[in-house]
Image (cartoon, rainbow, N blue to C red; front, side, top):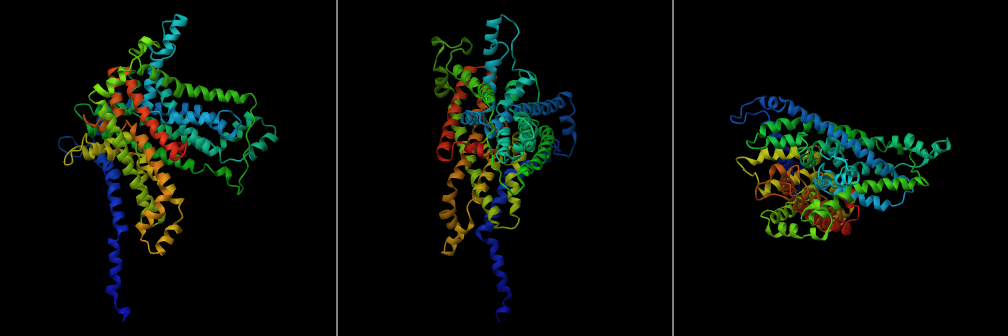
Length: 573
């Protein structure tokens, strides 16, 4: 008789549709569609619509690419990305080789510099270099004129090369991480063989070592290229006064009154296509980065003895430290405590008024600090929770089509922040939701923007926890959610906290997405810093940048204490 109870046998499979894990899967799909797919789809659709009637048209693309100025912006962005990436490679590769393969002293110092350059907001570094290398009042040029009596500046940051150089000073850590990670996987056997055959240290490095990590060098180059063409802060702070128009600053101009979001969407689409194409190339290259170790044996790595040359390499690292961190921070610190930054270091020029003005008198500064903290905290929490749930389902293979969740969680990695912001503006700023300028819109945009960081961290953490521990708890009568809460979650705390802190830090300094979405009462510190820079009051700008750096360093200090001193860099590998 039991074989005849077919209707009853079908009931459990139907009931599975209402199990918590199934409902959770549906909720996650909906959340990821709202955060990732809907904004991009809306941006794509609106790029073919007339603003007033909504009728289908190609006119937006004709407008976006119908003027030489707009085409020149695309050309400038591509050239800027290539030049910044090339400079980053020149800076980072010797440092990575020295730290990974040689007996250079000061390796801990070099790691500290890489971390400092990584966490310093690029637009803050740009402001520091304006104070250093502005053609009229920059410190380098003032000293140069004083020593030589020359009338022309020694250096001018308001040039195409100057802008690319400043960007590279805060992008090179990405190349450093890629190349050092690859070098750490290579044994010394091939280098020893080259030495036996008569190759010296430098010939071996050039002919053997670097070719082995060429995919990682090229992968880092591509990543910095993509980061640069999507960057807004430095091109706006340096490029606009220098009359150098790039894609991101041109997109910002499309958002000036009257807002032409349909033209901006059309102008942004090729940027998205370029990004997707180059990310595909990067993944193809980086998938080969371990090919040199496919011998079945784990080789030994020995330090290369450089003799006196180790001090030359250390000098290179010191120079990078001075240019990327020390000098910009020194002039920013001096300006933040100065009545007039151009008057130099003197007791009668010292003041606390810039900080007092920002903290107690400025209408928007305290609110911007609060907005930055809670927007970043909220977006980090949303990103980590979503990422953890998606990673758990994907790693444990709890649902069919779980890989679709992983794809949506990682998709923002190939979406430039400025494109993501335009998508959110197109999808949710206007009716019926009318979220423009709201805290909710900014938090959701930040959560979507940095979801891949949280997902990569969560996935790695869950893979490290063997499922047998959960299964043992379930055998003893625990439900899945109870087993996760009591067994898995405590083991993931450190990794999840690290992921949360990284998302918080990058969200707190985000400008490219925020500049398009904030309203009068939801300005963040990065946006207000940009506004203050336009006003030209560098003393107040420097003080506000100092406040942002203090907040960042407090969070980094917490991360170092709880997670490890290189918790940010390890997540870049």
